[in-house]
Amino acid sequence: MSGQVIVLLKHWLRYAWASPTSVLGLLFASVLLLTGASARTVDGVLEVSDGWLANKLTRISGFAALTLGHVVLGHSAECLRRLRAHEHVHVRQAERWGLFFVPAYLLAGVWQWMRGRHIYDDNPFELEAFAAESAQCTADEM
Image (tube, rainbow, N blue to C red; front, side, top):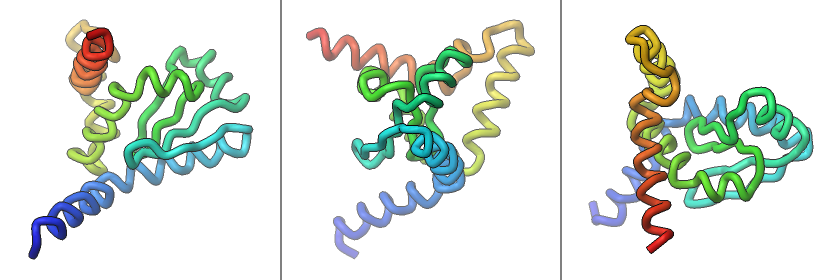
């Protein structure tokens, strides 16, 4: 096989492995789209934002974005632009963990909570994403 075929095959295998989580993301995206959200694709990731339900969920939860496989749900397009480096780390994590991503993420948070740490801020999945976000901010400032 040529090198290009192998690269393409690896690319599609990552999408297939992450697809159980992406399907969940597509279900949520469909609901947001029905409530006025808009969608765009950035670097192979579907980003869905805006609309009254997305805004309400942000106010209720305090979270500006949520990544499920190759789908990122967010408060606004501008918010997703600012958080893209962070959220795309979660896309890569879903590609690595596949259908185990959501349970592993939740268990990692519970484990931190059981150890007296913060369920979100100390979650190893989030720490990796925070590091990428920080690196992107530093690069943007240079």
